[in-house]
Figure 1 (tube, one colour):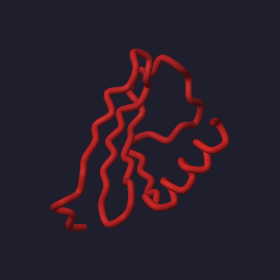
Figure 2 (cartoon, one colour):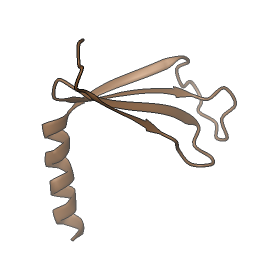
Figure 3 (cartoon, one colour):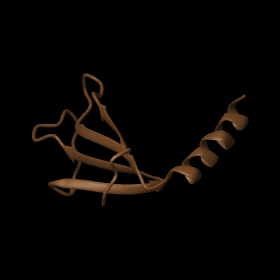
Figure 4 (cartoon, helix red, strand yellow):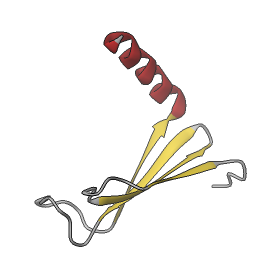
Length: 73
């Protein structure tokens, strides 16, 4: 996947955030990569070990955010 103009976001998290998360935009999608810390504050029974990932279409994300804004305003 070649995305020279992609944007990368590193999410620092909160004091008790149990995950390290990276988000980047590429080819019209948001790509999320995350990993549960080795010694998390909360318990996550049966949570998979290692790096996890997901992809969300940016247009779909923007549509959902716009609908959410209408509902809460």
